[in-house]
Length: 477
Image (cartoon, rainbow, N blue to C red; front, side, top):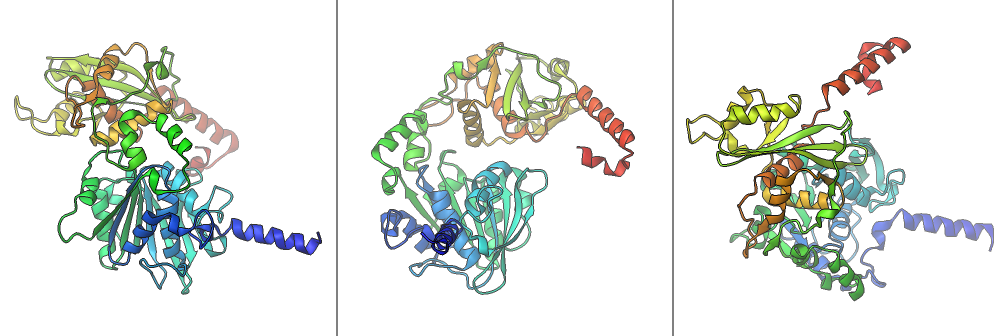
């Protein structure tokens, strides 16, 4: 084979590698569009509906083959000839958001741009990428990407995350917002408002692991006259999953999640909330290094006040529940003394209901505890989202529990749903505290003063040795 032919073949392979979007839904082959009727239904509905959701099973291509694919078409203006959905004949301003900055980077960014170091191998063709900016504080994460539009001009896509809070979704108008995984209703409403003045659209792609949440219910049970359009898809609606693969996947999924993960049906049903063997996460206690940041979750009440402490190994992202407090019928001063004894410097997150007035004297409990010296912030009390986050950490080996937490284990063993799929609110104080610290603790954690002082001493020493200007100390962090 001649050198010129080899070069042509290599160029063609490179072209295909950097034009991944063109491989989706062709006229012939295993990905031809007739084999994906639910996907086509979703795309077509965009012509008439401002809000669309694909509430579907895992592994059917809802993120890449639906959300990522349509987002790429709108950014580039490179619509296939068969496209019947919404079209933009001009460059657009867009957002793409996931539940955390890291999952946005690892899933959405990778789908659209490709792996780090190989940008242009994702769905957005390399020759359409003008430039990108870097997100501060998250390694290898992109803040915004600028994409050439077929009509002339440049589209802009900004990557966002739900854990940044609702206020991060306020501001300027957007023609397109893609929400991959389910957001809270307040974030969803903010996104919808951003599209109104420019006749924009919102795409949501998620598996309903949070149960019949507000957002899920709004799509599955829309009000009359709603612009919402919903497509539900199961493993049986796609050709790329074999029967053997389906059986293997089903066997690896907790029983209470099977309907959601295989059929896109919101989680309901009775049984253990965390069906994870204790042997998978119970460990013998060990001395935690000073550089592990820590926080605690606090659930307060007259009958029972409970707290659980968590530390995180940042290198492995392993979370450790290492201490607990469990006592009833005592005044806040008694609980505070016991909590401060674990470490006065450790911040806590508390049930937001504690901001309400006490039934005893009208004062808020969070205010009382703060006056007594506790560093407390309100926790995210999203029940299903918190349960899913704790289960995910337990089932992936990222949440470990010290063997001595016997009250925690007692509650864990009885933590269940009733026949209607509702969480049984019985002896669940430490389970609630665990949700609080897992959901809200990572953003408020602190390292021990000893470690912080040592880091400051080392920085000062390095600065003096190398004659670094104090204003440039950030370079050593």
